[in-house]
Image (tube, rainbow, N blue to C red; front, side, top):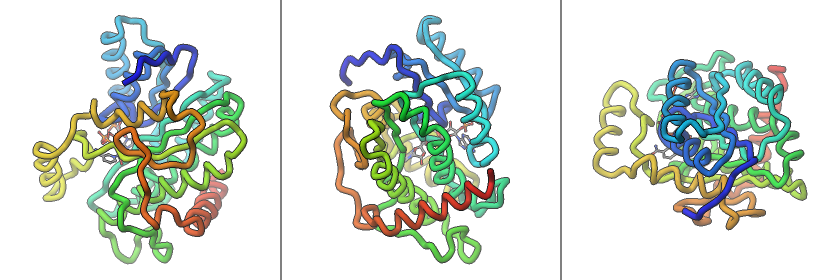
Length: 286
Ligand SMILES: NC(=O)c1ccc[n+]([C@@H]2O[C@H](COP(=O)([O-])OP(=O)(O)OC[C@H]3O[C@@H](n4cnc5c(N)ncnc54)[C@H](OP(=O)(O)O)[C@@H]3O)[C@@H](O)[C@H]2O)c1
């Protein structure tokens, strides 16, 4: 990785208490950025902050905000807390996400994968967009996944009330991350705010460690095939900090390089439909 100075920059990382997000937050703090960690568990978040300070010799510029990002009210509260303390945001890393082997609903009554992996990115970004524009050049980084390959969005049953296939639902949520990135990049043209999506690789984190066969199989597969969280965070860190991607927007990356997305990920009609549906949902909640 290049020697990059992020001094004076304010960065928010969601899902900063584990896996890819935790390494991303620490590495950006090492570059001198003020890093705002968003975590759902106050005790775990405080522990991670203390661990970071130890690593950084007490010199880390760290802050934290607590919120369950599957809840629309909590997303509002995270954004409000941030805006009450800071008047700029240089980088927003939307990373918090999950895989749910059984159909669950969020507190707002949306299917949990859709709520956490998509609505979270959509609403948090929307609420922070003005401060990002004010801080331009600024960046938004959306952690997606190659799991989106070969999938399209089932708009007929977005909430999965008819049939729940955990892997398919996860894959579609990660396709949503790319479609959202494309739509947002178009809307942000000329503002100096860029937005890109990425696949981190198959990474040995807590991802997919649910109960049952799927959780067991994921742990075994991670032991054999997965890369470390340190390696898995590299593309996120690259997109958040590298001068090489200044001005690059609306793209999909893997291994710190632009990659060709699938036909479904280039579908601007689906992207716009998803945007309108998401907009209606988050408007209802205000
Ligand atoms: N691991 C992979 O192979 C892989 C591959 C492709 C894409 N990804 C993507 O990478 C991103 C990060 O995943 P990871 O592998 O680092 O997984 P992870 O180790 O499970 O970390 C997920 C992070 O998100 C947080 N989080 C989960 N639910 C949340 C909620 N409701 N509200 C707020 N925060 C919540 C977790 O908090 P706690 O610490 O409290 O649990 C944790 O900090 C996800 O978007 C995932 O889809 C991962």
